[in-house]
Amino acid sequence: MYKKIAIGNVELMFCANGSVNVCYYNVFHEDFIKEISSESGMETSTMMKMAFIMAKFAELGDRKAVNRMTEDNYCDWLDQFSIGELIEALPAIQEFYMSSSRGSADAKKNSVEPSEK
Image (cartoon, rainbow, N blue to C red; front, side, top):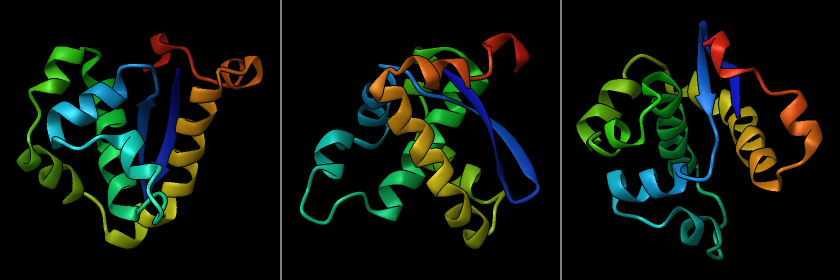
């Protein structure tokens, strides 16, 4: 599933699918599901990292290319936004991620087709 979400004045395409969790692990060496299932819940830094993975997956369209991303790539990606802009956009990104994991027909109907990237 693909969806455009604005972070500040920058509109980005995000992708949510079954392999974004694997890519998250391969890039950050952390288990996303374990992170969000902890007592502290979904931390802002965890969701910022997932936003990066989802944006890069939509941009590159290739799991192997996303798996080659590094924390330096993450920092470079973060540099294009103010922290306030990113934090303001996180609820929309989180909702998109969560709606994709539910696999509902409504979520898929509201998703942008990949050809509109």
